[in-house]
Length: 213
Image 1 (tube, helix red, strand yellow):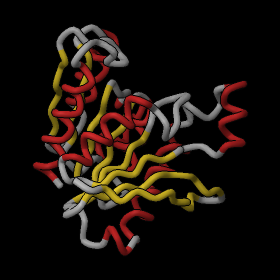
Image 2 (cartoon, helix red, strand yellow; image 1 turned 90 degrees about the vertical axis):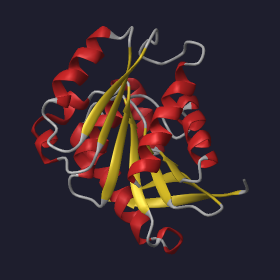
Image 3 (spheres, one colour; image 1 turned 45 degrees about the vertical axis):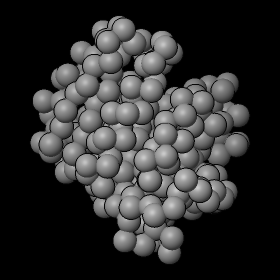
Image 4 (cartoon, helix red, strand yellow; image 1 turned 120 degrees about the vertical axis):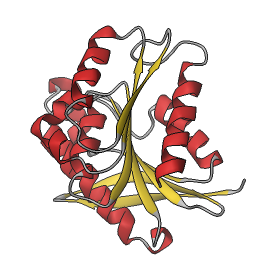
């Protein structure tokens, strides 16, 4: 399947974020990727999942949530990576930017969030036309009271050998009023580095997005 890919700049408040927008032929939806703390649009795990999502006929937007200057500061201080309101605002801005692009006209939009990016994705979904959210090893608990405002279907994917995060996800699941589900990948730890674990994440995410976008 042929995929068209281009670098994009996304206005987000007072800053501009860099991203890569990819569209396979006959796209019927687009998935934005919100990476976890200390990562970027070059996250190998998100890139892997994005490529699998593209092969299923969905567009993808891999993006940075921080500017280059902010990333430099964050490496020294970690002051931005856990600023969930800031990250959520930027994910929301990216959703609205994508929705306004001629290439995305009429397409349903989903968000794939990892780690802290999952909390940002859930918060952003409440104020944007997001149709579905998937979390990989996420911290949905960091969305706090905003979980009660989530209106779109949510899939939480957690490693079976990541007990602390699994417990937090199960607690968060009970606080999401929209259609929601949790999938446990047996034998996987937090980063899903075990053989076949990330492939399983991609398959689960694709099924969720294809069914809901």
